Length: 321
Image 1 (cartoon, rainbow, N blue to C red):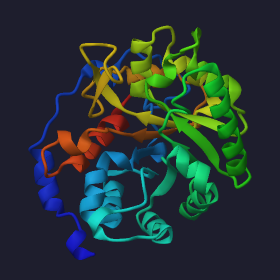
Image 2: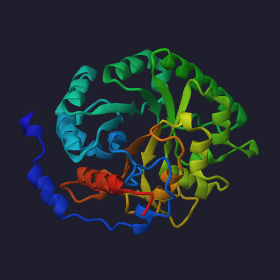
Image 3: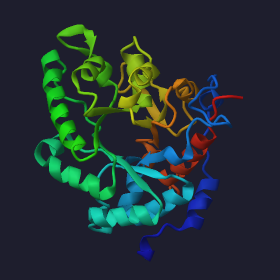
């Protein structure tokens, strides 16, 4: 295992030599003091601050879960969301071994992104792994369906309700993670927003949502007519997880997800406003993600440098001044 450990001196040298411009407006905003901040105005509680491992997928493939978990724990992360259970050329690893690594590094599994076909063909195995890893939730980053008709969403909701009931029987919450397309309108009913339809058709006892904040803002830019925070406040018990992802707008609002993701604090998303408006303190898990982190950073430190800088800015995010 020693050969796979990260050379921390190299990492720190890379961190010292790698800087990213930070938007002051993104970090401070004009948020009101509210129940979601602590006595010092911090909007993200450290014990609920985690990372989607897709952000550091290059390092997992390069040095494995053991070295990456050690580094994430040193940075201060306390929760991880999985994007797969393999570690590239480092070698095979079992869920039981991953769980031991989590425990050894003081980390908890917040959830995992799996494919819809994984649920269709191997749901019980997926739930077995979730139980082994101690996950309270299991999800997917896929849209509920590629059929953006009313009937298509009825069929998708029926699937999610069945999967969610099976998960709930084992004490696990099933969730769906959004991109921008879920906020578009039904192709056969242009007055019906698909995200609203999914919320309406799925059983709140069995189906939950993970809001990717950046892509929700992308949805509001691309398909106007809503504020992302209003969904959470209208259904606070259905949003146990956030992807805390920052970004800058693409020139064409109709392009892709309408934003390009960047390090936390280097974009324009008004996180202080968003978190400051939340009602229901302590219900949420805050998971940093930057899809582009492996390719957008000097290497070393690469994606782990982005993870450390973003962690520091998230911890310092305040809602009152």
